[in-house]
Figure 1 (cartoon, rainbow, N blue to C red):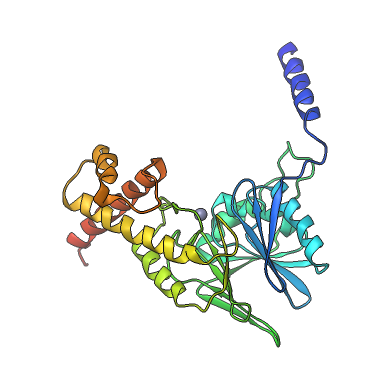
Figure 2 (figure 1 turned 30 degrees about the vertical axis):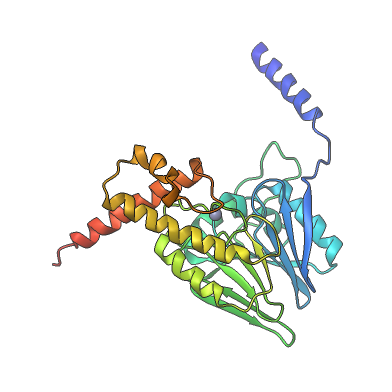
Amino acid sequence: MKARFVSAAALAVSLAALPAAAQPALEVVKVAEGVWGAHPQAGANVGWFVSGDGVVVVDSGETPAIARAVLEKITETTKKPVRTLILTHAHADHVGGARVFAAKGAQIVCHENAAGTVANYVFASPDPKDPADARAPAGSPIVTVSERIFFVGPAQQVQVLWLGAAHTNGDLVVFLPREKVLFSGDVAINTPVPYMQASSCDAHGWERLLVRLAGLPLEKMVPGHGTIGPTVGIQSTGLYVQKTNKLARMLLETGVPEEYYIAKLREPDNRIEGVPVGDEHVANVKAVARAERERLSKQASPEKKG
Ligand SMILES: [Zn+2]
């Protein structure tokens, strides 16, 4: 009983130490007329654009607190209400704040392969430690995309595209052809080391997807991570994925044990420009090599018919 009392008191003190309306800091960038991106201190970037009489948001921020800070910034950029939240994939740093938008009445949109995990986030119970947290209306449907949705208006077109499995098997990108802006999620990022360790990652599909993205007429990009604006991440992510695939293949073919990967990756011929040979890169190479080994062994022994 006493222990319980002490811990409750300690909790009260720690809650009191938090500023009442602490809002996570957000850096907002206007990328085109009616189009913005925000870079939170933690988690993935968020984008939004005016579409007709409402606002479409791309990704929710990692937490409900970040989502609320984003909503506040949106009202500073436009008075129109948020009507749609498109989630580029189901990773927590992109969908953790989704229930805040759902509670405001936004229609949630994601790829069909991401829908199960997305639903877990959207309909999660409010965090008891966050008194401002919200609950999504029970039973509100999630719209899923199989390959593409186009929203065609007199002044604007919005293309929501699935270009095959890549970073995950449920990646969507959002393309505004008139504004020449792409919201790329994590398939093209403006940081040096993309994450290739998701269980549904398709490293070869990712290479092909980036070749297609490179063909889009783009001026600006809101990537899932890194600087908002530049489109250089399409090329740099493409180069990284391509070289990581090659390295994984080479390490497999030469039979190097995993514990020696780091030494091999430090060799000058195996370096990728601008990429540190750190834990993330080594873990990516290991994950890709394992997936490749599995793929090759399936090819070598196809399931018997009948
Ligand atoms: Zn991700």
